[in-house]
Image (cartoon, rainbow over all chains, first blue to last red; front, side, top):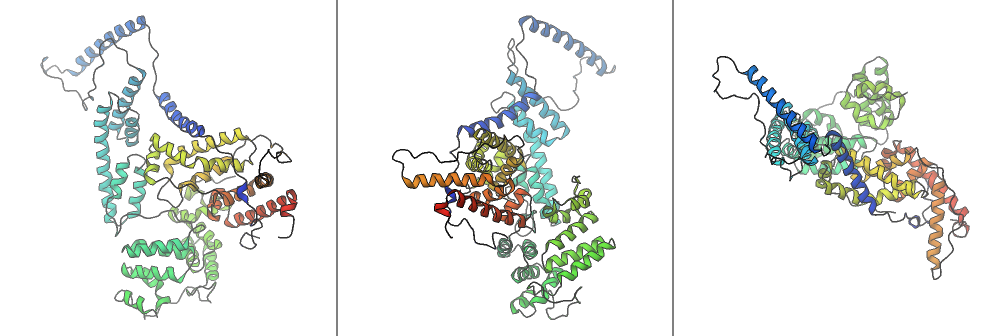
Length: 402
Length: 192
């Protein structure tokens, strides 16, 4: 019994009568403060905030500092100065010059905030040397904008950020030349967590007909076929044929429909993708419009090779296939450890008639093959299935469970 | 049914992901009421202090995980946040034992219209009926009836199959109906 089978027994009940009390708006403040407090706590745990020293302690530290500094300088001078260099020659310090920071007036004690900002600047410089991009971004954010260390930090930060963006854009252009727009999208999402400007720069790299927007999350169990068809139409309207093929195929995988397959064929013919076009040709041989669109790419009258499995039209699917027979073939292939064949047959079955059983076989084959990308397409639906966890834990890097 | 809050725009989400305080506040303000309502109903409206704690826990997790949310992904931010809130409530192991609810509604105050009293009576009965549901059914019922999540979204939130969501919802509705018929026989006892 499901809600679709029976009328709603609560149709005549005013469920809205049961309302929660108004939440206290102070809670919002408490949450924001708690969040800010967590960030501050973390910063405080990293930085050591000094307590105010006594006058005697200060004098001792100053004296000790002077002595240690003088001794260190003498040692360095002796170690670095070769004998053949004149004593009055200028010394060239190794590495980049230290970032200039305004001096503190003599006799004043650094505030805890100054100490923290100074430490953050030091972290920023270390991160810049190590090309630790996240470290650079986070250390820079830790320095207050009105801090006297901010200007110096900004110089280093902006230089490194621009270097990072230039490198990312360069590699995105390489990916775009290969047509791998998905990889650019994925990278943009990652770099967004470091610098928004980097993500914006990647999104601006032209890739494909209409940019690099590709939805990588697709779950056949909870997809919306109508929305996918609508998106495929939009992509066709924007002449984004590759995107249209992908969306139409997903729509058909989500819920097999002639309309989705026709969109896939149309987009394939526009994109000159012969392989995909041949896949969808048979159903539309008699369609004059499709013949015209695909003219020159495929011969609509050419006989197709015999399908893998003959059989009747199951589940109202006009596509010439037998989903159950294909599932049987997938199982047999699996029984012989032929995982590629098993995956191919299971996916053919899904395309013919989308069933949970076929999806599970496809997942099993993908996991056995070690094909993580394909496994992820089917994983969500079976994430709680102990057997599938054990089959897939190596490929997906998950906990196999008890 | 509670309306889903209008979604926060992508720019604000991205700014919140970068930890900008005003954007974080905007996200919390926008979704706070919905999360509070969800937690309150899923906790069966019995422990106000605990509800506040859970709402806070929920937002701590939301803000901690916000960096991983993809504004251009298939899930709306509201759905993502309600999913986290649902899991926070279900995973809450420190819940105090349920307390008995009052058997009778409060006496009408002078001048209180009869309709308002009827509605208060109905609210109390619904609250008791929902509180009596098994936790798994209660979660499905609250998400569907009060937060407008569709079956697929509920299935994802609770990590169960679509069919399980449907059967739990059907059972929950029937159980609530039976409870209402027993509690308010004059209103719901007759033939439907």
